[in-house]
Length: 142
Image (cartoon, rainbow, N blue to C red):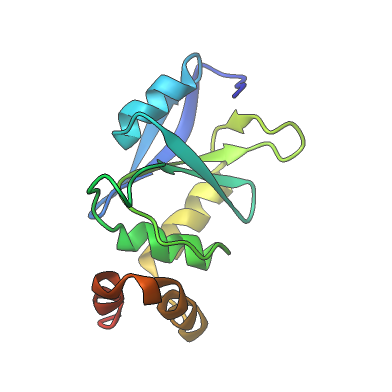
């Protein structure tokens, strides 16, 4: 994971909060591990050069279902049930490098996280969460 600056602009999303943070570009792996709260993470790439760094074992290690993150993933084009905390960073699609989020990406993430999901997204969430009955019950109120 190569980076070009010392501080990468990122968004951290938990089950309850969305906040702006910086990731140490000199040691992105450790910095992401600390921000997510895990030893191993996976990358979920969504539309627009945006990557979600999520707890790779979140669904099996007792991490809480992350409804805001799951909804955000669906709004941004990826159907996934996500657990635990996440760090959202930019991605250079040509090189694969992890980079800072642009102002436009931050605005897109913030807007998508604050809006009520569309009926299409709610239908997709229902399909995705069919295997997770407790999580499915949570979205019934959306």
